[in-house]
Image (tube, rainbow, N blue to C red; front, side, top):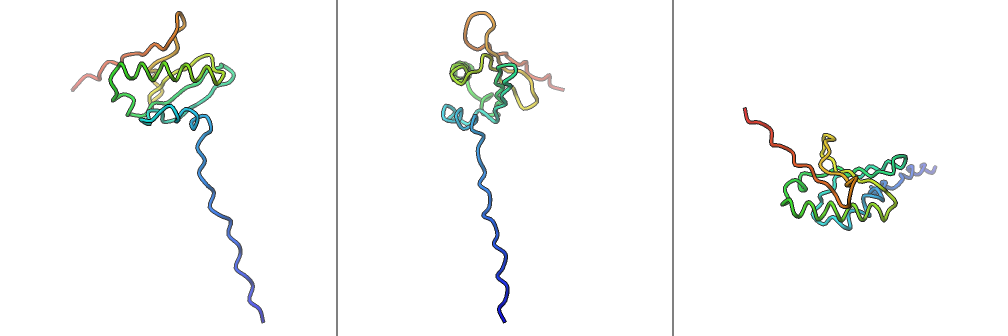
Length: 111
């Protein structure tokens, strides 16, 4: 009498990085981008920033934002927004002129 063979289990699926996020990660060695959300209808790309982004000096944040704007335009997006985890806009592509306009968030009042 032959025992039935155990069922073949399928290999564990590999976690795959979002292709858009993978492209942008090449330009993000400090892991400042937490997620990328394209909106093709509005020709807009929203990047959610990780806490590491806010910890950077303002000059470095501006450099990264301008670089991501250029990269997003190379990918076919006309507009770019940088958001924090709660959806607050931290920066957006300038509507007049060029480059990114970064918004300074006022610190929360201390109790």
